[in-house]
Length: 188
Image 1 (cartoon, rainbow, N blue to C red):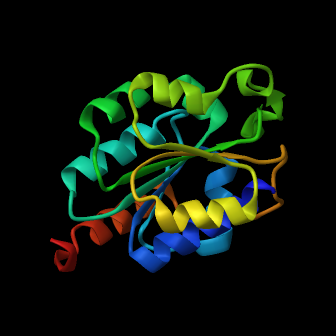
Image 2 (cartoon, rainbow, N blue to C red):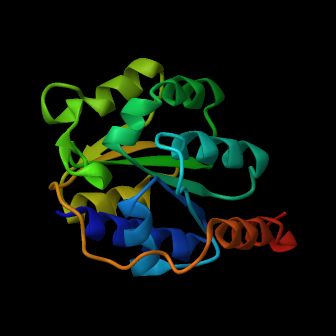
């Protein structure tokens, strides 16, 4: 499975459920924008490793909304402390999906620690997250997306980036549109 296919499946689930969808830095944001741009999406363009923390904060601030975060293995390694915070807060409306391709895909496909021995699912469990799942197939991802509402899913994919265009909005536009979506009173 390639990352674009995983992102497409996640985006379809988020759209179906009306979930807020946070995407990590770089090319995964562009891939999400390409497959399913919607007001529910927040494209984290500038800070590696913070998508998981942003998603957690949103889930706590908006407990009536489902929040899904897409984080890469390289980004997750930059902010492992968020796993402990997620465990301590244990929000039932927050699903963190770590797409692990074993590389820093946005900077040139340099190998990450997960390409050797580091196991992000084991680290999430060690941090105290009760619900941790792994898959490396499209069918497994689809099944987990239907069954799992909170916790962590680690999706193993092949290295590589899809050739997609840049996001057609400025950072301020992304933020304004997302904030308008979050303030929609139909979800309060």
